[in-house]
Length: 332
Image (cartoon, rainbow, N blue to C red; front, side, top):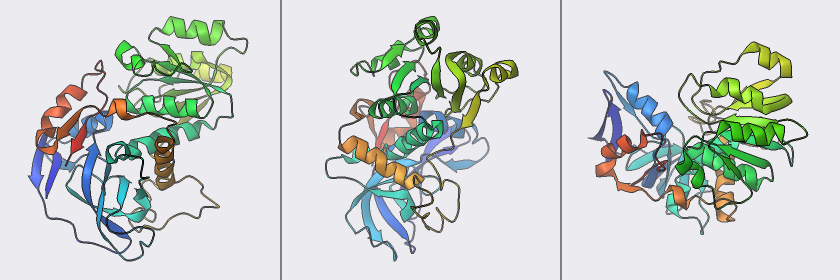
């Protein structure tokens, strides 16, 4: 089978053996996988002198089911998420806890975003907001776009900010969402024009390690407000501003509970529903439900489709932060 890897800071196609089936795992033939620009660019940059797998969100058809996978059957279309089990490859061996059945009215291409959707949903859950509260989503890459839409579907008051007009325009169809490309305009609306002076939470979805958004976000929140780090930003917050508002600084870790836990992932043992409601797998299910019920629209993010043979060239475009192309879908 063919796989796409990073090797010494270059993206290459290699040939590997199809993995052997295991109990509690599904062997999936990939239909589409989605490039996550921020994460994968970092992985490529960190591949100097070595070869590493890239990619973590895909959809495909089940070729064979291992034992103890009764909820699935051969031929089902599933969304799959989570490295090292999910990568850009023609065949994937994935534990059942990282697989979600795709509704009939959701296309495999839409389903391939489910891993990124789970990350967006978990970031919003970490904010622990109540119905009707006000949030700012700063940084409108693919995860920021999804968080913005999901927050609106949850009936929060949503303010979306990005320096790129092209990226904010992607959300202009939704008149509930207030869009900003200018920080002063945002602050005037959220602070000067608001009797309660600020947002209940800011979700930082931008990248760039050292970012002025960390300090700025503390200006945007109300007293005892929250800042959630979703993107690849160093948590460099000035203490005086944190102290002055008794702000909560929170970090969202990937797609939800279960991520990086070998019992949940490698051993495919799910958490008890009554104790841990929203695992990374159940967050994938929820993303698929939102798409199925037309509560969020994702097709506008999936217009750039490339065959796997051309995938190495696709990464160059995605490294331009000004582009309105937020991801590319690899067709297998």
